[in-house]
Image (cartoon, rainbow, N blue to C red; front, side, top):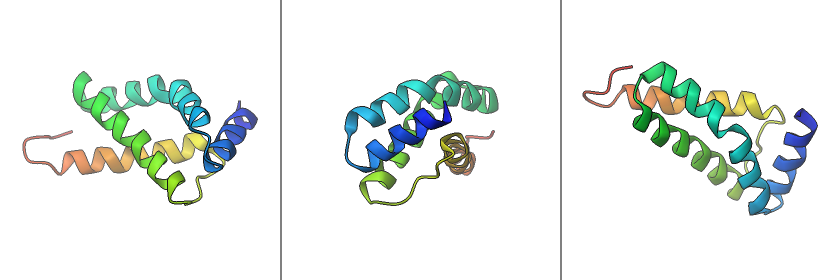
Length: 93
């Protein structure tokens, strides 16, 4: 699995949008489930999940390195999004 993620990340960094779509499909349920469990709101969890993957796409477009351990990078990104969400008025975690 890690080798496949590494290949998909390398293809994404090379500009392959299909590779990024594969990464999203592969990991979106796991990310959404974790976020939903932490905040308790299904629809907000969808938004944070989308923001997480959008952030990763922005990094790849800018040429920023994405860690080879994709799960670690996803975890760090989603934690930053959760922290941001918790700072919004009326949006406690």
